[in-house]
Image (cartoon, rainbow, N blue to C red):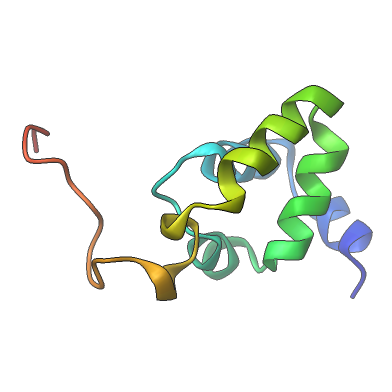
Length: 88
């Protein structure tokens, strides 16, 4: 299934949530894949299409070196990261 076809099947709410999750430092591409069925490459194509050129470049620069965007490279395995000062 092509990435254009996959994104056509998503609602506006789904697209907004995927873009929000992609911007979050602690949300991995694996989490996006499990919730929406999009590969990292499809997320990149979606972001390229829905963001301005400048925003897309900033996002790619930000996510390119992030270990937290790839679950296998994370320093923690289960649950989600919580800062020591974060409330419940």
